[in-house]
Length: 288
Length: 232
Image 1 (cartoon, chains in turn red, green):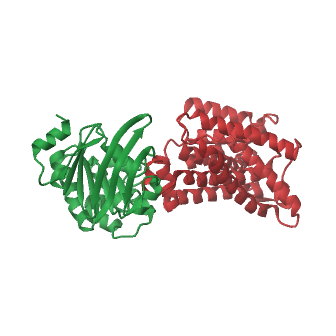
Image 2 (tube, one colour):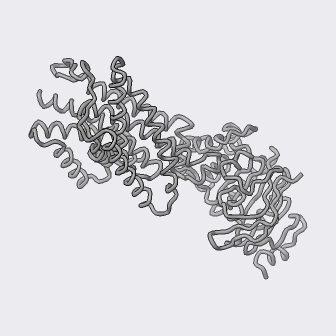
Image 3 (tube, rainbow over the protein chains, first blue to last red):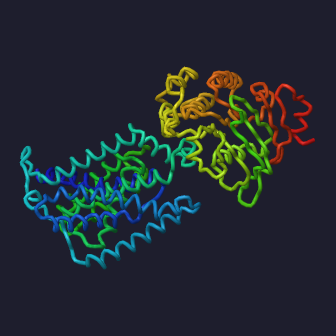
């Protein structure tokens, strides 16, 4: 029973990990760009949430997600429009990669400068401790809510990409960025929206993760690593694969912790390594 | 009334000049054939017209307005649309979604999904297929339908019969008659000179980036054309 509880909690954590990966997968799928700074942007969103919570203590902490997500979208839009689009057409794929790497370093050091290197976390009060009893399993309310939110967001993103004109334009731009111009689409602007969406999703993941575990300006790297593993484990380009990959990683992490309390993310990384050897194409090997 | 007027157009690929002082015009409702050997500059010329190639100089007027420096995404909204060489469909979109991409330019007019399916009934049965599951001819129909959904005033068609079965080519050229009754002007780029001439009012021949012949399609003799085509 205790093991089952661990696995269920691992699945809840995995929904959150899926959220960390989905933004990265979206940007890679549409622009063939690996955004190394994704983790730093998630941490930045967490800092913004902490600041807002301390400024408005009477507002429930979960409501700060709304302004944080909007801000993250705006930051993503500007990040792409002002910086990334300059190299998006570079014939050398290394140029955009290095640029995002540089941005991640700058952001990390700016955060140390502005917020200091102290460990922070986001306190939710009652809600973080609340739990309910289901079929004899003790289940945290907040982790359950997180998984539900992740699944809803995945469904919403899937719907937006498959069923709306915006989604058609995004997929068509991913296919042929020159040809969409013949139909009045500005590919650079599509990229701006996609990066905004990516960082907005990342911000939700970053804030919810800050409720679970503390962070510093240097936490971006860990978060990026999880996001990478989620995307590769699930199968590059597959959104549902990312959710599945996240859940598998979350279970491996919690099971590993139960086995060896000092293990941290070791067993999750080991599982990733083994999966990379036996199934390098990912759990869901398809294009979405 | 002249719809498209090109005067003294030079187009460059990097340091190399591909088009030299080209003069070209299309009247409203007219069909014009543009023929020439491989490498004569036909595709380069079309890509420059719709704004996909920026390094050019000269005069390009469409519907009275100067479009020489207009970016591709704005040119589509003016009603100058292209069926690109090699079809260039969106591979991860279904047939219907590919067609709907033509509507993004938001030009009003008589073309919609219904009319495109009436023109190419084969597409309606396959509306939820992916382009790769279609035959070459059907893919070409999707490419033409997608451009028609923009409600073009002038439709540029680049090598649409290349690599297709003769039956398919026949079927597609029959559709051009319907397209023209809507008042759409056409530019047909072809390597098949006879086919292009029979479907057009006038014919231009390109040779090494220059116009080697411009004549009314009815008057031109095969001899003249051969000479203009090969430069001999």
